[in-house]
Length: 365
Image (cartoon, rainbow, N blue to C red; front, side, top):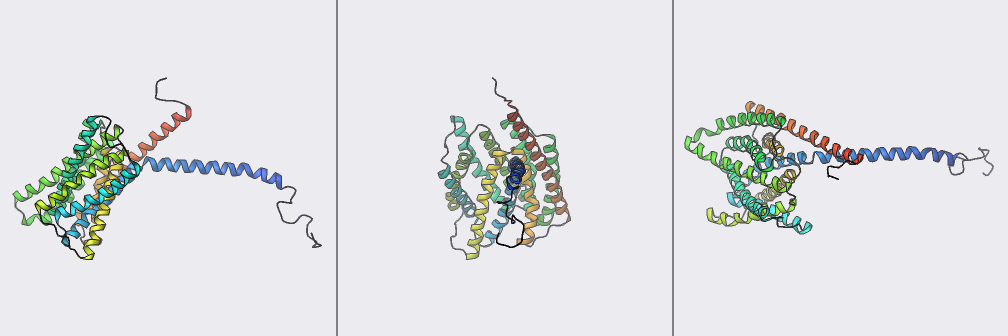
């Protein structure tokens, strides 16, 4: 301390005589802070994991709404019906094949029954995709949404109770009822605007596309949920459900003559459409793998209000008062079901964690 007239100990904690004691006093605080931070991170991770299926279902609803609008835009650019569906399946198949190569799951079930269900489920999904995509392209949007999103959750809950042994609770039933009311309002409004030039016979025939799509999709997703309960890996489901999409290429040549020359803008829309569709499919399979199929189907009804919002930006179509009221009812019903499922999953997860902490086990000793 070169003659500065300062204190005998400069402002340096290393040489301060009280430093070792001060450091010892700070250590418990740091340990306590670290423990609290770890507990908070674990709690946040537990909350997010409990709502994973709900979040994925919301992503599916957004992807479905976006894909339907992009398919309309690409059709205006010259992309034909089965050709559009085929490109969707190609993108999905590429994603799933990459996952299959990376994960290398077992591609057969534990029994011949599980393998047969995988194959049948893949074929059913192709038929359902064809029906719903043709509905988007040819049938009035009101008819498509009224049937697919109105009847779909009801059919799914009934089949889930029979096959997957997942019975709907009171909240899900109330949510389905509100969704049916909202979707019906939307369908009536849209049909009133667009059905003036169609005969009764044409309207009845147009209902068959979305009706068959609803039945096939409901059976397809319930079978996927049943396989998940049996322990079949998620990537195995997706492999069988996507590889069957190759059947659409010969259909595109048998039914119509595909055109392969488009403008750069149409190609860009087509690429975006296929990417959105692949994302939607993977998210849907993962959602059903981690959440009850009834909850996922109810949350997917949010496609309707999301499509209204996206339609304003991309198609310059503004919903009327009846459509907005129906969309609001659908939104409230789906959100109530989603929040309830999230809370229920969180309570169950914390109960299981408490049992593990206390050393309890469901296994017989």
